[in-house]
Image (cartoon, rainbow, N blue to C red; front, side, top):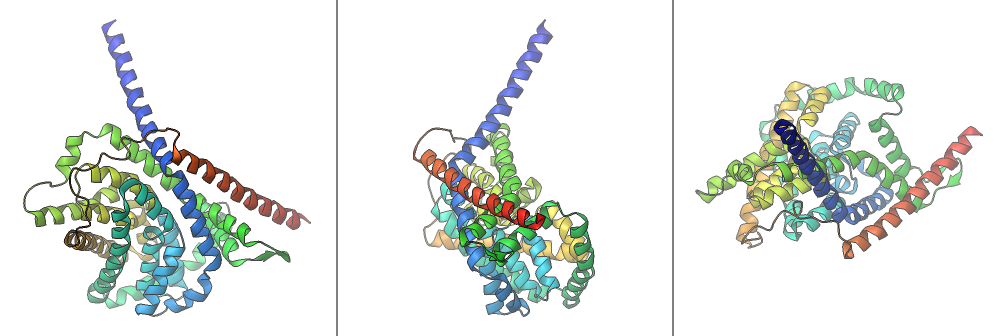
Length: 399
């Protein structure tokens, strides 16, 4: 009888933390849904009006103009981390230099509107400013490290391997036309590069709708996964564990460096990419990680373990190790520089850390709810435009 009661109690506790974790995740998604819709809409508008084809031709050389264009195009091209890596490889296959391709890849996941919107809501405008400033610092550091340390023959090897796999990639896309990556790529090309189909003009808002749906189809798993992982960590991890993970005492310089070093490692092990790592960043900030450590953590979406494996598949193990190492060092140094700069300017929030927005989120009806309702209606309209256009396209194909 006692064993049965203990088993029931254990099951009850398990259900409690399970439902509490799911509630945390859902409440945070509820708080940020309108910002995600706004960000993806702006991204869709930029993708429709910014021509990738005209700008991609300028990536063949490594100079300030090409890197700036690549960064700007990346910021206008919202992508999940996996799509960004594939796009960078495609750019290299088409003649882009390595540094502009990597700058594009970084900007398309870390300088996008939806990430900034969620970051502002969960953590504040200082973190948005730090994210943007640090991104340019990181790209500059990455450029310098590649120029100083990357073996000269390695970029040639990367290009050769990318070219060798281009036929294999095309073959795979034909063999698996329903795969998420190839479908998303085709949908994005359709949304941004085809103002008309079958002689019928497609409205700009319909093209924006196609881009909006494509972005969601690429990122929804990462966003949902990020909220779920953060929700479970907020419920299950004791506060003392976080405090032991990050130095919170001792010489400030040692603490700054240690936090910036650990931040990307947590990101690597969490497997969370792009917008999905912002809820976890909020949790880390509330439990003591330094300002620079948060920034280095957010940047590390391009060195999570699955992405590193893709680097090895695309460019070889040696090149993957170099790319991962250069990105890691760049992220750590960027976090440290951001921390020192914002500290000197008095822009780092001081005093007691606010409780994690994730741990204290609640589903209540307030002004955010009205924004969510408006966003849901607008998103439904874009979905209607998308599927209406697709149905017309399929009907013409049948005839």
